[in-house]
Length: 412
Image (cartoon, rainbow, N blue to C red):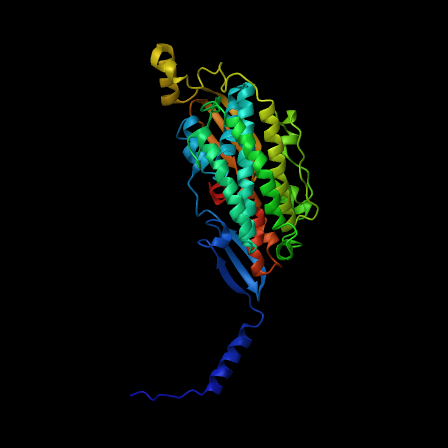
């Protein structure tokens, strides 16, 4: 029988001290995510720590990759609309519009004023919905629960309006190539105005819980500072870019959907820290409400689709059931897709997370030959290896929350 050797408490302490000395100067490697509430989705951060200080951060993406760009090459242009819902699934209406406008640019379609107004209206409502969730979850990341309850309640009211317009709350698939699925319901515009009127006081009450909150300010001011040079070098766009002090907003700089007809301000930060990114998003909600009111005040009459796009936009159901020509047209669009010319096109729009772009290559026919999606969340996350080192591990929650990304759009 083997001899049992007794180890004293003193020996154990000496061994532990010896082992501790061997580890001096070495960094510890940890994983944050992918299954972790800190990461706002299936994002994995491979980190090296020196004590509580991050010395290296490597974002590992792709856990939500679905091959959207390849899928687009195997279905008609209209069939891909529901897949755009699943990009930034916090603002599906805005994704639909951007994608449809890229295809319409390829086709050379000019949309009627009413269709443009509807699209602009739903895009701004989607921006409000996205920022409300971003602000509420960001407050929760910093330890404040109450703002999330306010913002989520307001977002539910918006979802009620979305459901009334599109038939769905979350994945709406409302836009069509050449128009939208249906006109706005009777009385819907007034209900949108009613939402705006009641929302602004609630927004002010919500931001008061954060803007001058000492704990929130200590957690966010001076944390995660992004310089103008780094923001441009890493391709950051949207509120994250404007928080750095760069006044770039495609709605102002390259207007589309008639944005040049409306008055609104572009909020710009000064220091580019986590606090500035919060302030920019809060002000963008106010400006979006300002735009929505102007759109509804000057809402045009007319068609909600391009009436001359007979080989692109599906005819009305009553005409399909009563006219042979419309029946054949509907059959061709459904089975073969809208007839597009050969060529290449790139269109980008100012989405809530940043600039979303679609590059489409067509060889003619109803199916794209190639498609590339420029997702703002992917570009915004690319700065993490530069941004995180030097911060504390406890800061990673507010760093990620301030970037306001969506992994469905990042991984595609």
